[in-house]
Length: 528
Image 1 (tube, one colour):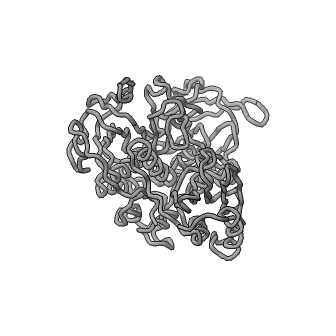
Image 2 (cartoon, one colour; image 1 turned 90 degrees about the horizontal axis):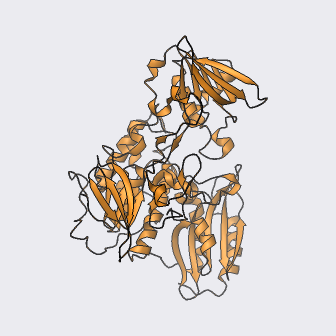
């Protein structure tokens, strides 16, 4: 069963804004008033627009880019993604289950729009190339009819009071857009540079040149996360020597149990460092950069282990120091942000925690951290995580503001155990967003069991309500296992089930253990 919102009709679009145009229309969505305006054309924006369109909710999508794809139109610089798609996984490409092995396709209700990423992969790797990813997103937008007004740059934002509800005014290079509920899907895409003396002498990752232009040069890379090691890996055959430095030791994604650490594809610089192959991996803070009379650069460091000074000469310095959210003037409107990346603080449903009405989609949704059980954050910084956030966000917007109630199929009480165990074994939302999204069944005594679909786990735990059960998949860094959350009589319980080496949670031990939990919960509950 697909867990996305089913298409439902709503009131006809207003005459002022006109109907939603087809994806191929020239310059769709002229300035004016729309119920929702999405800013951006990356995967998060495309996914949110797709689900809004399938629900019949009028909206506009604007973007300063020339076409769909967002950051994938430029990066990663060395042209190979970190997220896999496995075309021959043990599930049909048009099925919901296949999403567990396909991290790079957007979600769709129509079977022919699912698993599109597989069409563009040439078979040389299960990690798509950047051009393959761009083609995947372009094809989705065209086939799904997701229209965007490209070349429309967002410049500023203001708020206007009105008797029937405040409006946000989005000022663009094409004119002004008014809406009640803007969705900003603009990525974490503005280069960040620390306040290091001489940092202006470094080139940021975003401005890295063609690899061949670094031939024979000694390079110093500031930063030891994915972008730094990506550059080091891509430049190994060109540079004469490469130094990477940051205050903390580099860790792989396996060690950090998240996407934050260096992924396995970029471990060759580690090997070269250990074997003395011309790569220095330094744990040191950068105190300053200065240009020498020779034209080279001197990078002054302070070692992390003993605070002793260290200097390294380099022909070029590259700052792989990350990015920040391009929020323009949203903080001036009251949008609270946090951290080096200036992520907006968000509710369970990816709405600004400080300015109700403003929502976010795409990689920015990592600003809603969830429980971070065992220190593991959500995967909302990557497409295979935030595509589900977009679907849940649209469902909630539709319910709260457009009178579109989500489908809540009735379940027979005798099928509840099988339903939850099937979700634990096969639901991609739970596998991609561990301890963050949950499959929820409510047990209202008047309605009986109802499948509430996929919801944020924090909402389930904090919102209260009738008796209910939520199934998640969680990991402690060593094992992956189901966890059952039970709400009964206003009290909550948490039950971790045993891991399984084949990740099959539908066998007899799980039926027995979950059955015991559900028997206590559903005693006296009416059948569907």
